[in-house]
Image 1 (cartoon, rainbow, N blue to C red):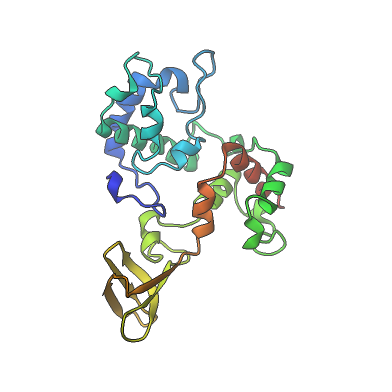
Image 2 (cartoon, helix red, strand yellow):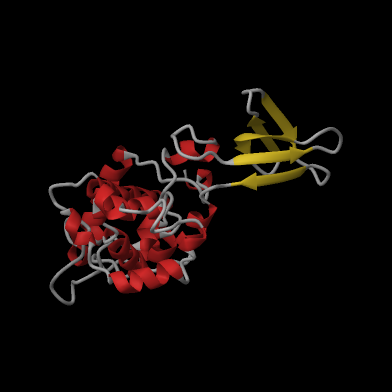
Length: 256
C-alpha cells in the first residue's frame, strides 16, 4: 500500500494489519514504549510516547516509521532492525495508527487533558511567527472562542489534519470540507476549471461547476494549475516539531 500514499492522504487504518503489527510491537517495542505506545517510565526503558510522535503522525503506510526503524533503531529482542520485512513495518505502522485512533476516539486509556502539555505563550509566538498561521486565520475572526468549541485533542487533530474524509479529501471533498480545484489549459481551446477527480503524471480529470466530467492527457503543452485550500497545513507538517505542536494546541485551547 505504500506506493498509493500521497502527501494529502490520511492513513487509512487496516485493523487486520494492526493486529499483526501488535505482535511485532510486543516482540520488539513494548518494553521501551509501553503497552499503549505512550512511552515507558523506568530508565533505561523509557522510550518516548509514540502516539504524540510526529514520525507516526507523518507516516503513511510505513513511509516514515520504516526509515526511522531501519536506521539501526534498537529492538528489544536484540535483532538488527534490518531483519524486519517491509510487510512487518507496514503492519507495525498500522498498529501505531490504531493507537493514535484510540486516542482520538477518547479511549479509556487516554484522557484529553493529557495533550495540554505545551506552553501557550510559545504557541502564540509560533502561531503568529514561524507557523505563518495568521496569513489565513484570525483569533478575532474564524478562531474566536475556538477553545470553547472543541476539546484539546480535537484542536490538535484539526490543525494538524484539517482535511476531513482521509483519501476522499484528495479527490475534491467527497469526505466534506473544501475541495481541491484545478484549472487545465489545453494546447488548443479554452481553460476548464473544476474539482479534481484524478491527477497523476500522465492524466488529469475534473468535474466542472455543472458536474460535467473532463479528462486530459498531460503534456508540456497542457498547463495544470492546482489550488489546494489545505496546502499550508500540509507544508506545516513537514516542519512543525513536537514542541511546536503541543504549544500551539495549548494556545488554541486557551482561546475562550
